[in-house]
Image (tube, rainbow, N blue to C red; front, side, top):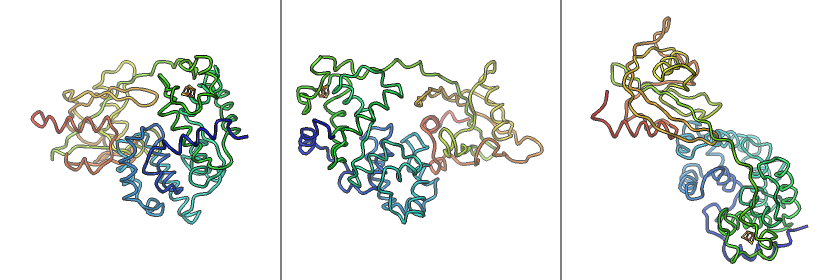
Length: 364
Ligand code: SF4
């Protein structure tokens, strides 16, 4: 059964669809790339990254044969770096095991790294015209309002219920347009605050509008406060004036990115003690921790950090070693300040680099 409002929604989309680069030639490669970039990220932020990626990697084969470090460098600033690592893995699987062609079914797409139910539905419907549903934050908002549903949408049971609705309502034909229309309606008309019901093409089907409850939908349980951590980082110089940087392990937060080494403060230790301990554990080195150079704040999805970066003087590797050891790091390097641009860093470390450049006169 198609959605009772499908015709009105598709007519509206015919007239109002926004021109986006990935809509001009919606091949599976283009749709996949845009959908991965759009996870947790605004359209305006994604557009220049998408354009640059296509320029550098016009085909999945080219992307598959590129080194992961180069891809992470291109991804720098977009955040959620596991997306870039999965992008690379998927490109290699598609290029090597599927002759460069994406699977054209939801089940086939779900087997690829980084592709969940939403992304599989989006690629299948938009690129292959398969009648497959999508459910993202915009669609959840539209559905809970259409149905005037007061279930808590942070609960898995509610999400499952909404997936069932999405399955029921997705159209047999033009499913890609129908899905994009729903998401676009959620973005521009059925907005989180003050939905523009007066211009809504499916208002006559909306129970929340009829009951005047649209501003109370969807119902979301209040989140627990976001945890905060203090983290130390060392700006460690050697006798040649070079800085020591370390590459994070590939798995986990900011995996594969470079950083000024350091780590999370533990109970009962000062920030200076924390830094000295982390450097021993991570790289087996001793440093003299000097002045606090800069403090920067950064928010991740589930926690926030304050990064305290200290000027440090390199004292040497811990015996029996003669140089740093990549113990809790993937790699390390001594680099000049200019060479920092050749490496991929997360946002907080980029702010530290900016502070280094802004405060040349105060260099230690
Ligand atoms: Fe959303 Fe208002 Fe349209 Fe209902 S009538 S779907 S609340 S914009």
